[in-house]
Length: 398
Image 1: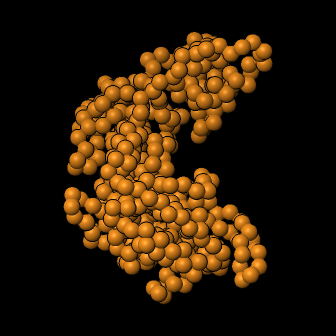
Image 2: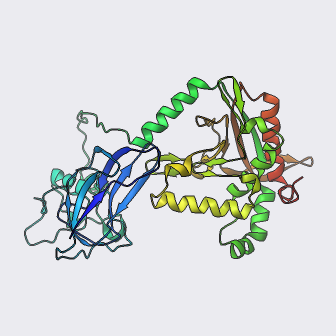
């Protein structure tokens, strides 16, 4: 039986996308559940898996725009074969270029087995005359990638005192997500009158709370007690006093949503995505953390849908996970403000007339000054600071 592999639906408003890469080659034997291809839209990246085992015939190569429901490959379920390299639960490496028709790179000897490697790794190996059997792969199962080949070439090249040769610059198209991010940021800069205010938060009490109750929290709720959960609850608590932060301008009106819906920035290899945690004001810290984990798992599994990222009224982003000390984040279109969290570092501060070392975090609030005055912005940020420095306020709602 022949089964069509089609581009899946990714939301009501999505009719087309970009076939970013194939994880298999034409003619491979694939197993049910194995990841076949990566499909990009303006908002998310999805993996498409094999619905059945069989021999695959690719009809649409990577690197082109495709329509939802378009047939891009076929699987012959009656074909015989096996795929010992990839199990149904293991992802194959992503191919950054259209699948190669060749099965034996010229650099391999006739009596050598072809090692696990991506198409781009085989192409780079052929270009630099590198035997892929003589290098180690950095990906799961020893998969050789293009970067592994280039690292091997770099480490084996002798030092030279001759001047470097000029090479033509490498160009590659932006991914759909990156193009959407660029368009949104440009729109934000053009439409909003932005101002950023800063404060610093003493994280001593929050760290003590996690140390004292973290294990019990994990056992009770199945998730770790993270700083993001505390901050989102603090945002909702302070926002009830300063609702302008949660609104945005449409024409000559200020639009106030039906609740506090916070977009949480999640980094992926393709760019930043912002799934929305809805009605944060009604959620417990445990429920917030569970929702964050749910979205993080979907992002890692490339199963986030556009509707997961729609309807946010405020954004929280944590550059601290990358080591950022301070930034001026930009709100998303349709929102008026964004909170930037940063790295927690031990710094000397004045406390009760003494200089002490405390774990400190800088926080930044960027906001649309057309709607939000400085007084409201400073008060809102101060409310977050007070809640984090005294977490009992969140539990007592005072």
